[in-house]
Image (cartoon, rainbow, N blue to C red; front, side, top):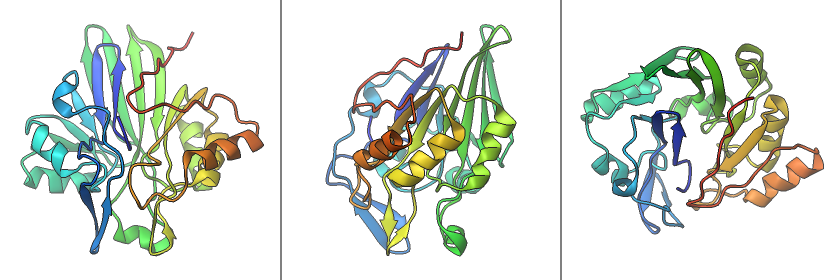
Length: 256
């Protein structure tokens, strides 16, 4: 739907990721006096969506959970996020927020199906700068039907590339699909989200069957266009990369 906002339908479960529904021209607060203006409208508004079972929030930044989303999302909506974001959201009326430390999981079961969300490591900034930014998590979504694995999806969140992210594949196994947050976001010259080169590094490290790039052109602080990432992937002969248009639906084919 724009930026990092997607609607995921996994069997009987529906998840909304990083909801931001403010229109083009709206401003979001990024902390320490920094603001950014949205450049493009979201493809849909919250009332137009199928009602989600939960929200998956990689971190509490204005471009991932904006004022429009806070007003629209019901207070009793379950939200899965970082422990830091949980504390802040519960103070702001979202009492069903669950904070997951890295490698811990939350599960839902319904009609013989299972959805498991496991918090994965991520770093939003370089070095000590990371401590000044909101905690960020990646997420592993595992969908099972009658005990059989159907899909394993990695949502990167706003992490920078680090070689230790190899642990995700080592611990979790083969990744069927990956939603990768890009954009090369820069504040005061510092890189805070993966640019094209770092995104290609992570794609080569994780080697998912399908990679869907998102989070790259909605705000003025994003300096690395999608073409940077696609070019870097072509140079490295990385397969399975598929751009997804705003408002478009992509089928995540279950494993054979």
